[in-house]
Image (cartoon, rainbow, N blue to C red; front, side, top):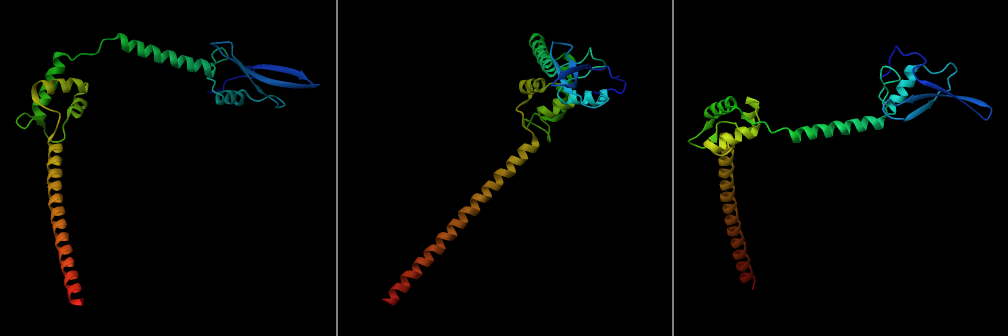
Length: 202
């Protein structure tokens, strides 16, 4: 970011004489590679270094405390790629974390509190995910203990919703059957009336 403490020598000044005219440019150099970039500076006394720094920042440069610490956009991207690669390499080499006896004890205590072994389901809205979040442990640890001793990852609230849904589907089916039967009756009555009218008309 531009600094209020920069002097006019913060960036390199390049003067070029072309077609009988003098042109002035402000130059920035990358501290990580040979890349340089210039910005035209046509102001009479020269633009203040803060204004120049802002223009370079808009072009993606990272501005350091001085001109020996500026970094170009390409080097910044390369640095991010290296950091990602280092992180991925570290994750590949580090063994996965395993639960301690204390972790397992806490998980089992929580399952004893929030899992109904008779109905084989969590109470209320509890689940592997919510229990893991409450204990601040990986969900896989909770799932392992629950699957090993207790039962499936379902809960009371979900079971109640399933039962209500099942009841509503049955009621819907019954109402649908009654409506279809009533329509058939009306359709038959209309057909009979049409036959009687045709007979009388003849």
